[in-house]
Image 1 (cartoon, helix red, strand yellow):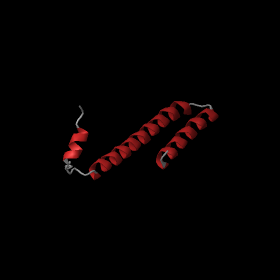
Image 2 (tube, one colour):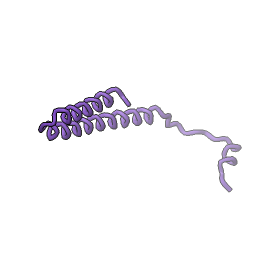
Image 3 (cartoon, one colour):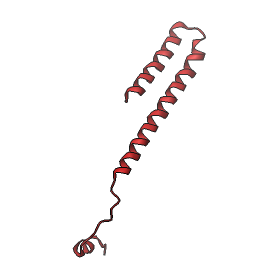
Image 4 (spheres, one colour):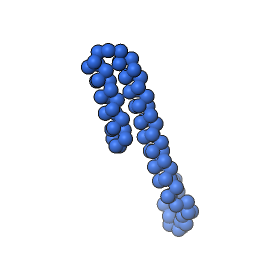
Length: 78
């Protein structure tokens, strides 16, 4: 788990645990707040992964490959 996701997950778990420990109306506030925090962390993590994948594709060379006659014979499926 990346650092930010781990911190948000720990915060959300602590928030829910605290709300159950005090047995008050905090559960009504803590669970939606924890879900929002998890959703934000998931969005940030997906955005980071998408940017990483995009940067990998941009580093790929787009040069055409020149095949020799021997290569062409090998690549042709008969």
